[in-house]
Length: 146
Image (cartoon, rainbow, N blue to C red):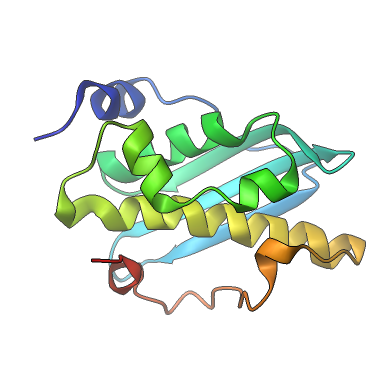
């Protein structure tokens, strides 16, 4: 049911924790459905120099968070914004259909943190055009593309 990569990132997650003096913080999820993901970024010259996460949720949510942080570390903000939930799932060698919403959370957590950075620093990024920050009432299960 779960790939070896999913199990590895669940049992040995990378980049867990928080960055006390983070340049950006993004949180997504809904306590009603049980998945909450928070990401912390350290950014220098529009490049992600460090990223940490805290996730409350299932193994797929933890694995998606871990893989997403690995994929954006050292990338520019534009490259991080281009990371899709499908790319996260593919990097994990797939997720069960019922767990694809976890990869959506990872994509949304990245956007939420970069939105926070943009707001703090009066910056605009093409990848944030039309982005609306989460309110906490969203059901990310509905965001999965069929």
